[in-house]
Image (cartoon, rainbow, N blue to C red):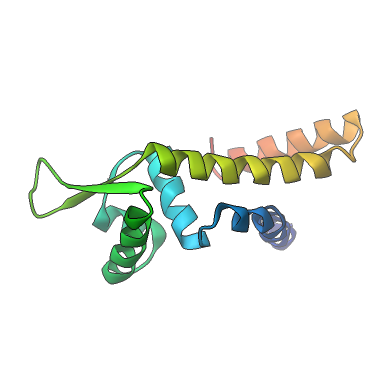
Length: 135
């Protein structure tokens, strides 16, 4: 069961991710925007930990996002040695546009199911969220 859940999750994400290219951003950049949009402003070190990348990699990715006007950097008020990254309105819009495309792709696929099948999918998702301690 765990193997099937893993395989299905990965394949579903890949299918939904095909529309991500329409945002003009790499998966890494979209992931950083997602962390900032849904998690709020973050330090560079916290972003690197969240994304499981090195500090130089996060610096490069954030720099690219900043050059596109999608994030801004500022010195942390509590520690001037740290930099806090915040998503801009343009960054939020770009991420939300990509997320809408993913959701629309998934919704289109789910339209093939009847009401009972949709209820069973919803019940299954609720169970998976519960055992994985997801909201």
